[in-house]
Image (cartoon, rainbow, N blue to C red; front, side, top):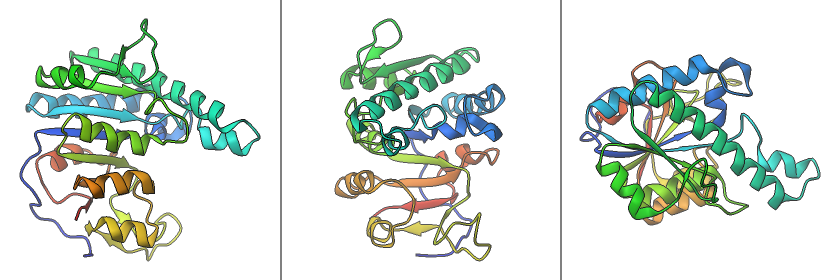
Length: 245
């Protein structure tokens, strides 16, 4: 583990999986969809697509409904998770609209069949869309309750051959404690998968981290709201925290 520094980290990525939280679309509101924030995210995605990067996206649904929260309120966990999956599809359609208004061709693929709104998830079709330069947005999680969209991101990234999972957050790095509550929190630029698991660091859930570790899929955690950060991560610059090996 090392403290924060700025230098070239890797070669530019050619095919990425961008993991967005539902909260990222809510902006300062904390819930719902902020169209201004949505437009800014779409601009960043358009910029890297124009550079030839193939982009797959997984979005959470926490700005609309979070399955775990529903379960703790007395709902059946499976039912609550299915409601959360439907919330992710709302976010997918909102991002698709924002991208296509900027002339970025997209496809939404859903793990739950809803033909009028999205294609069914078919791995080979998703890969073909990526090869043709379309942004592919995966909705409805894995289609199964008890799995998070973090796990979906790791799974889909491996299925369609992405080189990295880019986890967009509200902070610049992974810290050893909550930087919002502890001004002395220590940032890390490099971590191993075992560091994350053993220290309980909030990068992605343990299932997602284990999947990435088993398949040597790197994760980069970065601040989505820092202008140009996504472009610099894709270029291989030392932005945020890299989790690997």
